[in-house]
Image 1: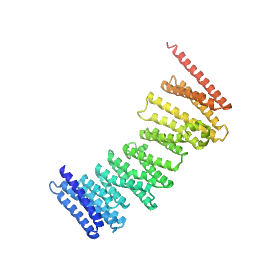
Image 2: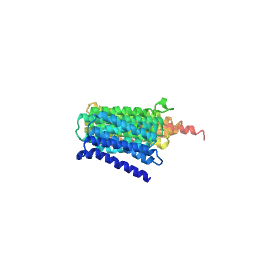
Image 3: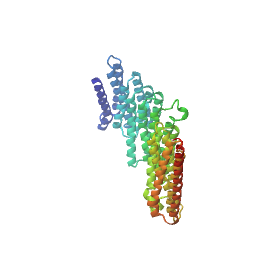
Image 4: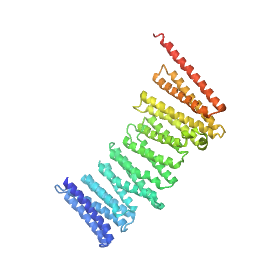
Amino acid sequence: MISRVLAVAGVGVTLIGVVMLLVLAAQAGFFGPVPRLITGVAFSAVLVGAGVRVYGRSGGQVGGIALAATGIAGGYLNVVGVTTVYEWLPPMAGLALASAVAAAGVWLAMRWNSQTLAVLVVAGAAVLSPVVTVELALLGFLIVLQTACVPVQLARNWPILHVIRTAPAVLATLAAIAVAAFDTPGRERLYLLLTAAVAIAAVGMVGAVLAVRKRSGDITATVTLAMAATPLLAAPVMFERRTSVLVAALFAAVLLAVAATAVVPNQRTSRFIPPHTAIVAAVAGSFALLEACIGVTNAQTLPIALLLVTLGFLGVAGQQRNAVAAGIGAMCAVLGALAFLDSASPETLAVQRFAEQRLGISTLLAALLALAVVVVGVWAVRRLPGIGGDVTDALLWVTGSLAGLYAVTAATVSIGVASGTTDGFLIGHSAATIAWMAAATAALLYGLRKLSRSPAVAKLALGSGLLVSAAALAKLFLFDLATLDGLVRVAAFLIVGVLLLLAGTRYARAFADAGNEDSPAR
């Protein structure tokens, strides 16, 4: 253990010396550029040669790995310096040479079957590269390190290496994006940052998918996928609406397509990717889709977009009995509901002046979609494995009933306001109360029909019907009586009263018939 600590410390100190030779010596004017470069390259080559020689001796593995790692990382830093500090190589040539150095280090690590060597090379080069340069070229060199280790991810299960190779490129790109978001960089710089984010995401996704296809239990590969996706998820903040929406939408399409391969019907026996990878891809894709929705809409149309997305996820959840899709759908439903409440708040629905200012066709469409979400959501949740029981069913029906009542009210009031008539607001509220009572009556009649054949279903339907009836009566006497006037109020009271009579009569007859059927049995 002590030998390893000393070796790692030696690697760090020596690499710092290489950086000093490249940067500080240049700033102080020591030697000339050519002697500094020759010294650095020769020193790195000697270290690699010494490492190979020491590794072959008895007990020389620790020292050999440390020497070789120092030499390879030092060579990589020399390439970074030649390309960015001295500018003797064009960027593409410098990246190609850096790829060759990194590939040599990876090859040696795989030959020696040493994760430690690979980690020391990547960590040393990645940590000290920002000392050599902080220009955008730095991102290219860090992406080269990330890419060079992809073959290792396929051949070796080295979790530390896969995190170490991904983190530097991700963190550096996120930092550059954050600076660009609060600064006013040129358009070329923005698109170079976007290219870097795309490259990181592509390398991370390809490497992760190939790795989990070979080892389905490779959680580290899924973690690297999540890490690699973050820069591209953050990139839209740098651009205007059109570009940000395009970037987010395309990335969402790719991620959700990858996630969908885990639930495609013909892939059930041999899934393309394991569930843990599909979950990460689905969550990241949902976030990108949310970014696209926010970018393409305004305050009035955002609920429509979010509720449409919710319907999609809940539909998949119900069809495939997939809890992850249901969870994402639930989160989208919450966001959609909050956005809907922002445009159609209780105060807006209750005050005519606010309703006429804020409600219209967009809130009507959102309310209809909210109703659809309630129906599809109840259906999807009831189809999920392990979901059931009286408590769950009761909670579903109560929640669905309350959400449905609010959506119906928003829809009818929006129709009334959008019609442009003088009493549109009042007619809308009258129609809402009647719709509430009609829904309650339908639930009661359905429950009474199921009373003998499906007592559990009948209990839920009757309970929901009575709850909605109470809500309709409360609205009728607490709100409509004070707000409505004229024939609108008369119509509301008459129709609700008739529906109550119908429900009460049918309720009494059903239980009387049930009692008559039980009498002979006694």
